[in-house]
Picture 1 (cartoon, helix red, strand yellow):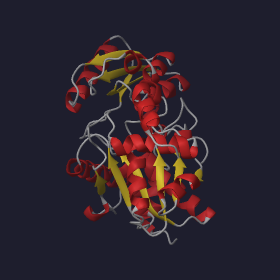
Picture 2 (cartoon, rainbow, N blue to C red):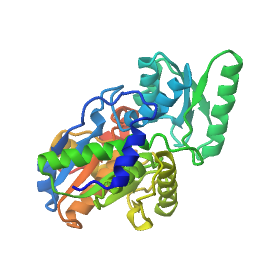
Picture 3 (tube, helix red, strand yellow):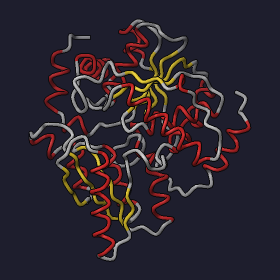
Length: 353
């Protein structure tokens, strides 16, 4: 593939930004042969970003490389982050902080109306505690600005006590540093598909905060790759999610000093698998949990990857692409334990495959 001149310029800038290496080697591509046969459409392939080598893995490892690179460059000794009770991002931030000799303050938001012991104490929450995070609670569900403001208040208290805090903001209006991790992942994916001769016709990824979706799309377009990327909505409807992805892409262009290569037509968000809402799974997502487990021995979680896999299965089954459907597995495995009842109900209700 011919690499556009702007691509070289962007990666020259990216490679000079503060960064700590956490993700390790290239994550594998695996053909989902049994699942592809079951679906009976286009081939399904998975990129295993659930296997990044830190704290039980996931896509947030790539994003944290740039946030924590900036934090350490600024002399921070404490990192603060906010997320849902079963947040994968919180769990991986706590793990990364320990690796880097930093403290972590984690704020858990009441986004999902669940109070069972598994959800409140197992899964990612258990790992947060194992990694030694200081836990704070925020009882408002969908209040990104309020959650970020509360983090700033905690950070101010820490600073007054002599610490050097760094806040990872996940709400809009802040530079999209985390998305840089998936601009770089696009470089990895282009090289990887070319080296194995994979004819990918479509990429599907969970789209929540939007950093992974936007970074991957931006990076592919930088390379001149017109590979369609669909973001399966997991938190908000497609209209609002498209706005978020567009905002991330504008921020990335500013960070890298290049023209934004992403057009409005490039931003595809699919909210058909969102219902009944964030942290809850509908019929197609529950079926995806069972199919992944029974066909491939692969775990997907009810919050993110079950919905994105359901979307990938739909695209493959309708043959709405030329070439393989590449499902980006963003992790979330510990949430299987936090949502144990939901996961067991999904697999127990599924017909034998």
